[in-house]
Image (tube, rainbow, N blue to C red; front, side):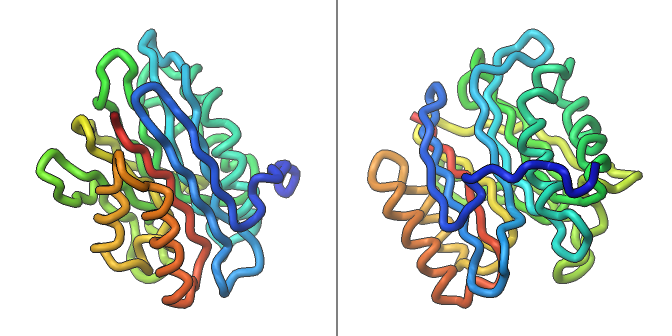
Amino acid sequence: MAGMVPIPESSSSPHQETHQVGPWRVVVRSDVGLARSRLEDAWKVVKGLTMGGRPVDAFAVFDGLGGLPYGQEAAWAAADALGRVVAASTGPDDVLPALNKVVRETGGATTAVVALMYDDEPGHGVLLCVGDSAAYMRDAEGRLQILNPKDSVGPHVLSDFLGNLNMKGHRRPIEVPVDGSLMLCTDGVDGVADPARLSTVLGANGTAPVKAIDALFSEIHDRGAPDNATAVVAYRA
């Protein structure tokens, strides 16, 4: 039922958590920003899943659409369902449609960017996305790459999202090199911070990633933090 999804205490702001997931050191940071009254972003890190017989770990961010009712509930419903959905899927193509069904039951809508990383093939995985949240990777040459298109037809105007009856979404294989890194973030991060700052965060593997992420969110605040900002950064050993 719309409005009945419990919002975890971890949705308070600011929030930080870290995880060790196989070869990945994962840092999550989320902040309500300076212009919004509540956090409508959500995130999830799930390890030890099996999808279609393959062991996988899942990292994700979701950005509830604030212009529609129940955006916060939609984002957290998707985050809460992610592990169950992946475990019940025969492969990556099942995941976004199943999440879309969950979100439609809330009456809300949300973006999604989900990385499914295979435990039996380190660094390899699949990226699933819909909406205007983003995925970035630091490649073997140290370059910053954006991995997904954005379903946006203007500022805060989306052409596709979870909760859309005709949701399509995107899928692409990804390979993160040894000592490489992956960032999933809402548009309150990459739509505000300088790209050079994103590159610095992704390049902080093995040095001081938390300090680099602190600097990223400090820059976002210095630029007015006009939206919720959430990043999940996974560093591969």
